[in-house]
Amino acid sequence: MEWQKEARILQEPVARPPGASRSQTPNAKERQEGGPVPAAAALGAEADDDSADGLWELPVEPAKRRPECSRCSRPQKVCLCPFLPAHPLHISTHLYIIQHPAEENKVLRTVPLLAACLPQDKCKVKIGRRFSEERDPELSTVCRKSGTLILYPGAEAANLEEFILDSPVYPSTIIIIDGTWSQAKDIFYKNSLFRHPKLVQLKTSISSQYVIRMQPTNRCLSTLECAAVALSILEKNNYIQETLLRPLQALCSFQLQHGAQIRLSKEHLLKNGLYPKPMPKNKRKLRKMELLMNSVKI
Image 1: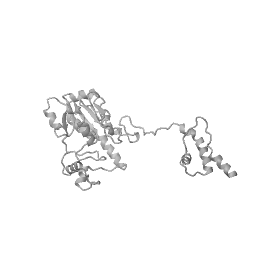
Image 2: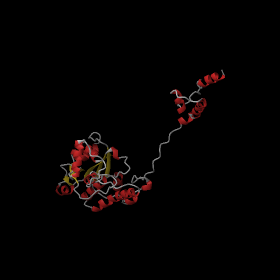
Image 3: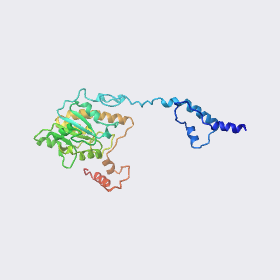
Image 4: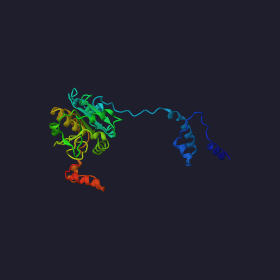
């Protein structure tokens, strides 16, 4: 019968030229899985498969990133260089930023703005979770010097302003950890190098101006703000704090004008019954929430 002969012809595999791609079209995959494919669609699939062979060999172009400013590391369309000092600030203190790797690719990070305001030889950024004498001899040497401080609000941390009044050696270097509070805590306690510098903290009543990111309490400051306050104290120059905070204020202002919202601290939300999430069932996390509600430092 003619229709039987035609059916047998359609079922025979079509010969492929040598070197042709083995990639299958969706119709070819349907045939493998036993799905019903009309005769005309089967012939069309083979033709499409052959004509598309060359497309599989074309290189895939990576997505283009927006051009960034070489100084402030912001996209050129939202460059913050007009708010940076014309020349790097003159300071004698060396600043080391220990940055958690997760912070490196965040869009609204503040460390590039801080580094753009300071001389390159006075501000160094070290990225990582773990540091040792073998992996970073330079940082190890810095941590062991008597004039090095590390800014971390631990139980034994001295007030920076009071410490410099009584210290026999005036501090020459300060280390600041950049990351979320849990990340900073992890870095501090899991790196023995950071036990050598003198532990200091900032006892200030100012509230964070980094209002587009949520902080645990109203007194928690961003990395840039911590550096601004600490350097102004060590250099005895309030102009440093004003200059370093200017690009942060511009960043927040721009974001708020383009849809961002002011993020109140977790402490404020809990105290005023505005916290949007249910209270945690984990006892340790619940205890931390209770301490925040009672204004106890955690």
